[in-house]
Structures are given as C-alpha cells and as structure tokens.
Image: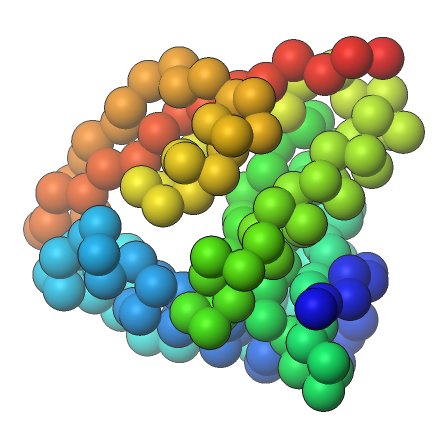
Length: 158
C-alpha cells in the first residue's frame, strides 16, 4: 500500500536514491551492466533533483507505509513524462501504475491532450498497458555504450 503526494523539497535525496537504484537494480533484467553504468554512472545530485522539480514540472512521489519514497513520476506542462522510477522493492506491486494514473488525471484536469515519454524497456510494458503506442524504438550511444528506449505517446480524452 502506498500513498501518493506532491514532491516536497525534503524528498530530493530520496528521489535521487530511487532513481539510482531503479536503474542499477530494477533495470538489470533488460540492460547490461555497461548500459546501466552509461545511463547513470553515479547517484544523482540531490540539489540538481530539487532544481529540476522546481522548473515548472509537477512531480508526484509514492511513499510506503513508513513514509519512505518508493517511486516518483513527473509531468511537464507540454505533456512530457520525463521520469517514472520505482525502487526495486516496489516494482511489480502497482506503484508505477498508481503514479501514472495520478499523472494522467492531472494532465486531463490541466487540459493536456497528449502525453509522451521516452520509456525504458521495463517502463514500455507499463505504458503500453496504459494505452500508449510505440512511436519509435530509439538507439543511441551514451558514454561509449549503445543503449535504447522507446518514444511513446497517448492521446487523452477531454
């Protein structure tokens, strides 16, 4: 059972840790160690996370029964979902789906007509279940390592 709420300034370090653990642990089944290291070579800086959360996007966090952050998602004003990360212990427990559902409701309320994302291999499955279509599989070189994701989108009903 998780509780969703808006991001708070105190969440920066916890969000950075969730992001790092999600890439390095939860993504292990879909990306090689070299790909995960290229994707995120170090833990994100908490101050950079705080600045990003204050740049006009809306960030929601999922907290477990102890109040610990176990996932988060953001929504930019143009409908772009830039981040959806869950701690490894939250993967497969519906946390990502709950975060997504809350962001979609928020987008509809704000009059956003289209959501789009660049989804990892694992996130692609969640977004497909939520009605997104794959627009393109993207492959590029990052820090000397080839990595991929999926450009996906979904039209929203007014």
